[in-house]
Amino acid sequence: MSLETIRPDSVGGFAPLEIIKNIQQAGFTIKTQRPLADVLAESTKKVGSFPYKTYAEVQTTLENLASTYSFASLFSMGKSLQGRELWTLRLNTTAQGMQPSSKPGCVLMATIHTREHLATVFALRLAEYLCSNYDSTLQQLDIYITPLWNPDGNEYDLSGNPYRCYRKNMRINPDRSIGVDLNRNFGFVWGSTGASAVFTSDTYRGPYPFSEPETKAFKQFIEHRNNIKTFASYHTYGELIIYPWGHTSAPLQNSLDRRVHVTLARNMAKITGYTPQQASKLYLTSGDAVDWTYGARGIISFTLELIPQLYGQIGCSGFYPTNQTIIDDAIAKNIDAALYLLNITANPYKSIPIDDECYEDEIVV
Amino acid sequence: MQKIIKSIRDKKTCYLVCTIMSLWTSGIIAESDNYPSCDIDQFQQEFPYKSDINDLVWIVVNATTVEERTLLAQK
Image (cartoon, rainbow over all chains, first blue to last red; front, side, top):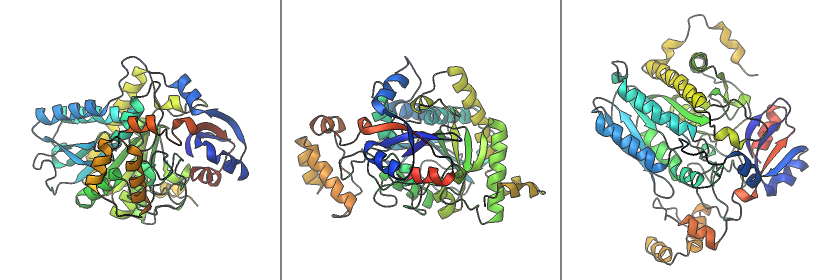
């Protein structure tokens, strides 16, 4: 089951019909139950020229940036299950495409979950901003932006009218259900808590770690780049800035790493107005991207959940915000937060204050 | 294997393609990096998904603790 709306007394989310009885047998009371088709009809009707981006639009925007700016280059991190490219824009004055670089690197990925389209809109706007404001600090870095991590799901979701509120990739499972939750498919404590072994579940983890081309391509990309220092994965929604761990409620054992994650999350939260917290404070998850980038590669890693904070009792509308003013404001704040992350990428540990006793309150017992 | 898949894809019998993909998934036959693309729309017409969005439901559940939410998340 995917948990989308978390309140003090309840959670709302999507579950396959076949596990409803199982949830009840576990002692839970289901307060509301509505077929997704009904929910979609009410809450995700297409809105005119709404700015969610198709695969082709993402590709065109990135191609234009790469052809306009000499320091920008476009390459594919790999192919999706259905053969689409995982287009990645790279900003680097001395290396292009897949060439190695010794500059400190920052990787910014968006929309691993299909229905979280606003993250892609944000990533494209960030790419445009960075290209047109490419200052001396940015020139010292190796920056990667992948606006569409799950392009197959993106096309499937946007082709629906109403939108389909779809989360996973397009893997056809052995029972002929569709999709693996890519953000439960990473190979760090994979298959542990907070991910499902049920094919139809929105949090289905896949048959084995990195079983999906979209996660495997990212793994290979990261493993060939020892210069990557920071990583951010953009999602919607919740207005949160989340850091590892997700698979355990214990804090990061390495004190310096714990303090740098807390510091950076807090500072980005000051910019955005979002809530900084350890991922497991909501619920435990295993096999997600940031646990792997930090746990396996030591990269300072964050998940950013964009707007809205909470959206009524029905989750779908939260994935398809319509107020352009609010969207623009959210994008502007998150561009500033991304700039902060980029500015400290060369040496993230410098951001830790000398007197950081206050960080003890971040330790989850 | 790729020739077989190309052949059946040409006949638009995606069900067989998907069966083979399932065998990969199950580890019964070796996984290939070159996954065959499947015409999803065609497949959906001929073999409706066992569970697509139509089988999902939006539910609100009385969970209050991290442990309870975690239990739900792995359902």
